[in-house]
Image (cartoon, rainbow, N blue to C red; front, side):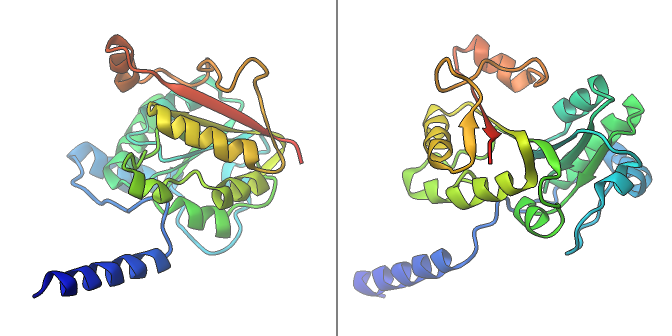
Length: 241
């Protein structure tokens, strides 16, 4: 095969990829521990929400009306469980595509005896588009998303104009979109997108970024980063319209 032919094939593949819808995450099954398998079997029927292309009745899901916080990509769920534990007056929804992470979160939630947490294992964009009512959330959290640090991959970053507009539509007026990243370049990208997004205002008036709010637990990964001198940037934008 000639170099010219290889180049043409590469260009064709790249064009095809651009035409495809870029998902917020790639679903990763992974191997579950016995504890995670047990939690999925026992706790998913209680705390799991199956994907369905119809709007959720969140009051019915939780059996009450309360402030609602949704986190996209909660990892292994330790910080989400801790947030739900210390704020029983709020309801929390977590979306994660890594099945072992969902199992670990359910394990932690069961051990903590939580009743104010529900989890989903599906693409976040489809959940937002199909399942969440307009103006139903008080806060959306996006902590340490994949930074796609190579320049040619920046278009894959989840924080893009269309995505933040979708988030805005699900927030109540006065609701907050809270992002955090340990990649300075991504923090700058987030800030640029949010400053240009209609209907949002930066929650801080003392610079572009916020100190970590008390409600966001400091993760072990973050503690290690601090010891090594790595930075973390929190951004909080409020829906104004």
